[in-house]
Amino acid sequence: MQQYWLIKSEPDVYSWERFVRDGRTFWDGVRNYQARNNLRAMRVGDLAVFYHSNIGKEAVGIAEIITEAYQDPTSSTAEWLAVDVRPHKAFTTPVTLATIKSQPELSQIGLIKQSRLSVVALTPEEFRCICALGGV
Image (cartoon, rainbow, N blue to C red; front, side, top):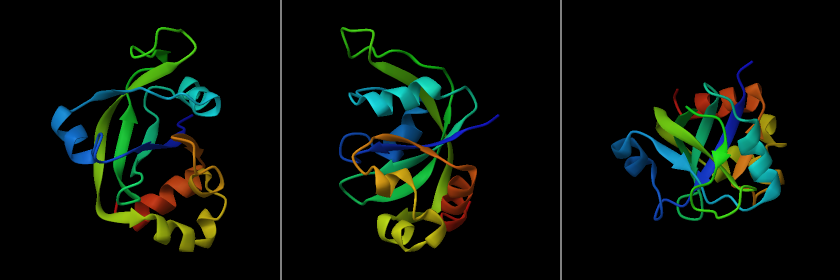
């Protein structure tokens, strides 16, 4: 059963545009236990909304999970994990945080309820709503 996620990146650190140029990357540097557990739950073929945090504060595309969790290569301890992702589809219209907050069907989304998490689970309905707002 396919699952849906939202992954955050600061665009001045790693932007959607760079992600598309790279063609794939590993999602690393997560140092929060709940976000780490979300990485652990990801399966190949799951989809994730790619969200620019801090600057822009907008969802800009969809990434596909292409490996399951493994030890984060930027960590010296096995407790921290990473997954590999590749670009799946760009949004034709970025979906701003203000737009997300204005949608009643997104009122319980982890992006708002747990705003500090860099990896959050989405329900299929939340994922579909964000994609529709993004023109996908």
